[in-house]
Image (cartoon, rainbow, N blue to C red; front, side):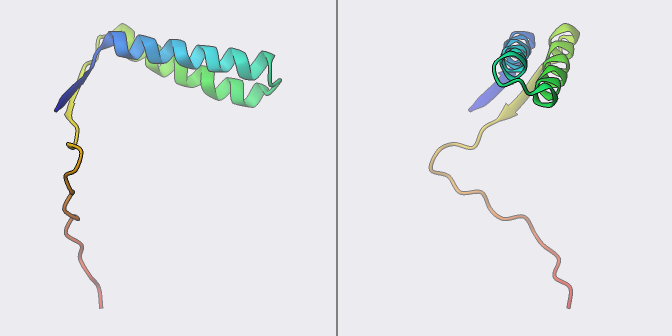
Length: 74
């Protein structure tokens, strides 16, 4: 199943992190955590404003991913 992350998705994520930042700052009184959430909100807002779209396929439920080839050293 293909999933698309479009500007609306990014904007919703940005708003979520703004709310988390406000909560961390006002309720938990944790300025450092609030700053991290604010930075994440800024990243998502930038993605929303730039119009970036990301398309990817999700692994269907019940399927198994094959392990990647690994090089063994002796």
